Length: 284
Image (tube, rainbow, N blue to C red; front, top):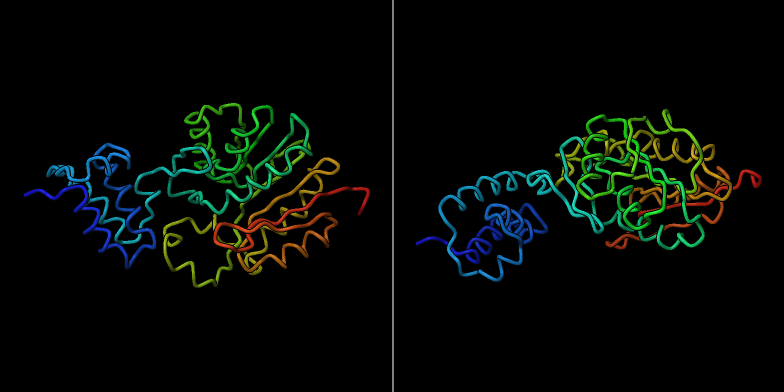
């Protein structure tokens, strides 16, 4: 007798609990893909038997997850904000904690120009840039990444989400960037190369170039903060994501470089995650 949808979710979720904090969700996503349905279907037809072909497809995907491979890489997609993004192994997986940055921008929006110029440094999948473009149709949004494949992926995600007006191009931080911006945002590498977490969980499969930075994870944050001063309009804002234990260091960095109204926002897990400030050349 074939296993039902409900039975597969129950049995395989128990197997995955040792490897994943989101075992049931992971199984549901993999099973839904194997059935060619959405997750709602799993609950509506929970007693429906799964065919031999569907079960075989699911088990192949499940085996990859059991080895630790992230679901976002297995399914090649990840939800972020109100978007559905294609993912690939050469880019960081967009995470819900980064949505804290988008929420902060929503707070700042009234103080920014109606047609604000914005750039996302190290854009990866394009998650931040595309989310801001989605929220603010009149904004001029750009995104850069040093990895050519990441730029191509971000461009693909722009088309996928009907946001082709966002300009993505290759650049190592500001190297190929021109002009000044009302807002600069970034989720740069910020993990210490010696951090033990690099050998744990999903990050084992993510590109180290998108995770690790020298000087205890602060090198890229320092570079962005220093050079952003030359690319911000008077009173422009810089917002950067950082590690849970880097709040004090990043705040002090911005203050030392002359940023004002320096503050930090807390992510969904209760950790300091986004720090930013406003820059006035005349105040330095």
